[in-house]
Length: 285
Image (cartoon, rainbow, N blue to C red; front, side, top):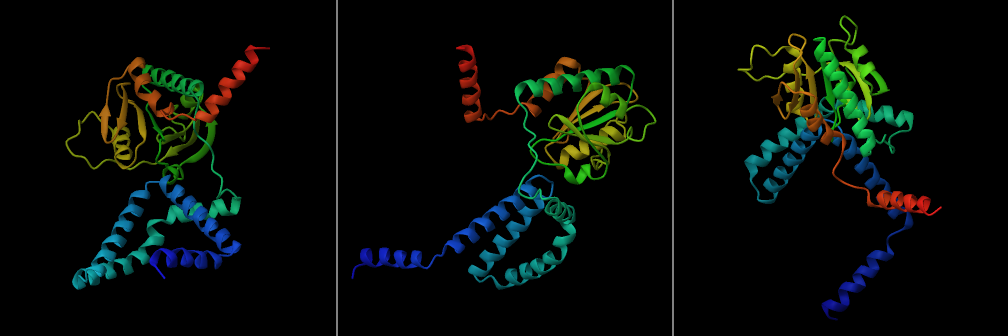
């Protein structure tokens, strides 16, 4: 019997051993792994997870090529890694258990905005920043993008309120409990306020930069967030991104920087088609 005849027969035999329960189990495992990855992707721990994956791959290749000394070293590292994993991923493990208890493991809140909503959010942020700048009221706002900041928001007080310039003014009003912390902005809502941010370890920064600016640079070094700062000493409006600080922004410049953080370039073609179809249908009435 030739190879061409044997191989399909083996596939048929293998397929006959698969039960419907096996297919269901594979789907459930795939969903669980995907949701776990999505939760890690929403935190700064994703970089740690990638590092652990690299260690696994290096250890695998060391075993394949029989690099005994390196294999022994990486086996010891992996042993300690399993001990450290619960400590490293403690915030994510706690959040997973909370979502399981609340029945929110499979479903997450949608934070994408349409263009009108995004323009409104940017308008409110710019309006609030200019008002805070005029009165030299210090403010620190972290705009969440692809990388989630649940671990940072947990250090503050959850608000989950619509963004308005009046609310921002009240949050950062001098001598209020939330004044000295950072506000986390997720989509069109202020998710939490009074949050603690890591300070940058950069040296050689200008002496004009206080704790707020150093915190803004620090968090922007660790994630992809856009951080809006209003100086309490000078009223200067600044933006921190990727560890770099852009200062002395006016309303127009601030709008140009903020808008891409809320208006995403990708499109939902099905939604766009449905919306266009509805508009045409209404126009023919």
